[in-house]
Length: 100
Image (tube, rainbow, N blue to C red; front, side, top):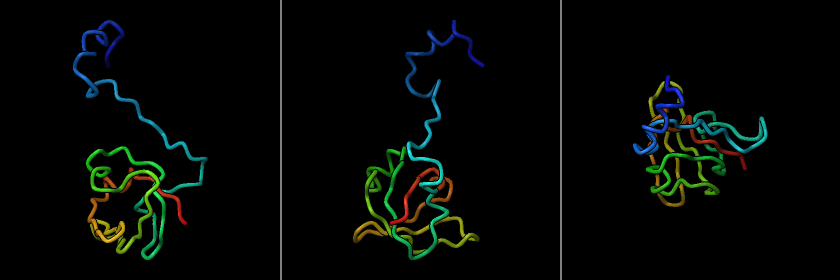
């Protein structure tokens, strides 16, 4: 645990230290994680904090379709426009969506 004296010393190292867990701005129960979206459903992304996934086209406000979401598989397959993406469940759990 870092005390206040050491926080100033480590501030030059960037975002690796002292990261805040930001919650979703949606009201409770309005959105769900991408892993909870059933197959064949369309949804709009409400929260996504992963820069790599945002660069692929899965940014806030984008409509996606869940193609395959089997609980025994380690990945989920989603479609955004003409593109299909295979996402790891750990990353998909942190992406929040709202069903259309």
